[in-house]
Image 1 (cartoon, rainbow, N blue to C red):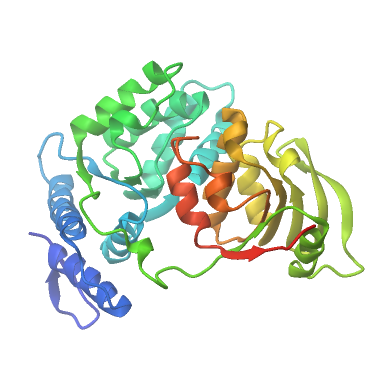
Image 2: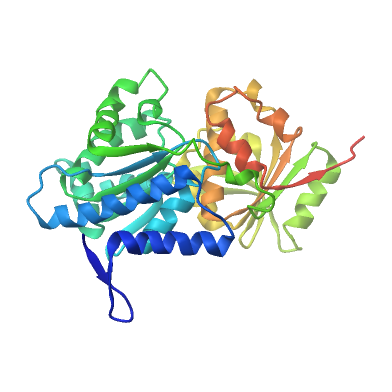
Length: 361
């Protein structure tokens, strides 16, 4: 059992430290852990204790990390965030998975023309962080699938401890059969070297009244009064710039209006053009209040359009953006069950928006 000296000079075992921080965080929220959450924090505490010992000893191929998965609202991010804050590891990072992949792709540019640029970047990351925590681990495009298998292997081989949360079991991470074979080595690695834990037996904490603060507005239906209302919510003044073409990652993106860190975008421009998650990250870093006008019923849209709006909602949510959605219909009509594998998570996040209904003629 490993120990960590606290501020008063007392030595506290690592697993006890993790449990104490978790219980304190629950008490501060007025919650009690359900059986699934308790199993998760027990697993994390025991793994970290053994991993810290294993890294200093001769243990071969220790468990590389923990993979927590389950439906929305099961407390995965809360468990991981509490664990991350308590983990007595100086070189540690917690990062949204979209943002990490973008970072890796950007850093690979520094090794253009050299052998194994991905391996070089992965080794750099391993030197910078001995513990990596990934939130919202999932794969939706061929670029991610090709990147991840080798990236994870190098990180594990370099001894980086990894904790991941996901809505999917490892076997279901990459549902598209066109590039599933390219991701299979990553699935095999997760299943063989990680402890995989399902949190679906627990309570859905997002169902609790007042459990989440509203992070914007969901407005419907589309009409001129809504358009005026969005402008008012964004507090545009006479200094507002309209119909602006921005250069985002070396290609154009048209914004209906912008002023300061506030922007109004059109759904067609954002989701019917080939914009990437990297573009959405750029927008959410540049603008802190974002309104999107013209969101349709998504079940009639192509899978690429659906995936873009889902990715944008994920990134905006994790980035702390204040989001205003101007939609064609109420939420259950816009995100009908069965339209897309990820709509369950998206509906859960959009239900945290305050609803604004317009009486349009």
